Length: 441
Ligand code: MEV
Image (cartoon, rainbow, N blue to C red; front, side):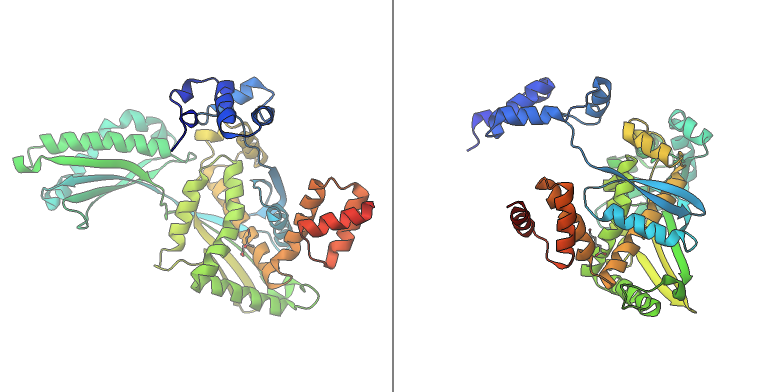
């Protein structure tokens, strides 16, 4: 049974201190310490803290994550220093190293293929679908007219509503759907799309009940929901690197450029055919993508959900990146849907997101799509390069060792000795602690 003190009504009305107090007293063994610790993460600037608190509800403190940068990204001949928010060691080092590698080989190329987004109105209606299809031009005008206030600014900026497609799907009795395309310029556009859809569905209801072209027995309609789709396969960016195989260099002392290229190519082929490998392969891509998406306060859940659905578009979950070797040339590319914004939403509110965008010289949404995809490609390149040469643990363990040494409060001298000692040895918390103990004795 749940004890009474572990539940509460009116929690949201408590002050921040009150919320923490109730929580620590009921769920922690050392309430005073925890309260002190949680409050130590409050921002010293009250105004900044208010902004952060405003992003969610029941906020009691902040959850810090490292903010890193990866320099030397040459994308379409422009140099970027990419902001990355990520908690996994090695990711930023790997991205930076791959960026530098490609900077010396012509850089990373990228192009936006399309920026279309979609929203849907799902409804049940037992009328004649063909008749509604014929009435669509008239209904469309009414929908647009009803939402003109909402759309005014977006249209001025060059965006707005595109095609409106009526679908009848026999999976559910009377189920119909409007699939509506949108262009949202530099904003991610979720609010804009959802507001338009709700207005369109009101218009649809009125139209169905009032138009003379329908019979009385066709007037009943039930709107199930109106919502944007986070599947944006037509908000697509492509990024690629390419160089003669001979310029890839030698790897790890014992792998020639040719051997490396072949092994790399095979690794990507495996990720194309085997979902077990593809998920890990794509996770590596998202290590880079999510880090930029988070640093710019974009919606990483939407980006992830969409990316994985896109990776399954053939019916089999597959690699998002591709590799080919043709006439002695090595090509590595990534095609990924990325619905990102550089204006509106949190991008303008989150103080660090604003700085991230400033660092990227205030890109348009299309530029940010290219930068983000290029970071994903670099990350994927670095991961596969490690996997087919030294193995991933080599780099990971170096970072892991640094973290353990820091945790054990190793001095600069101890750190340097430990790094030398563990160069060719297995790193674990115990082995490092034992080593330090011996050293300190
Ligand atoms: C680890 O976060 C990511 C990798 O597993 C990606 C991959 O295997 O390609 C290294």
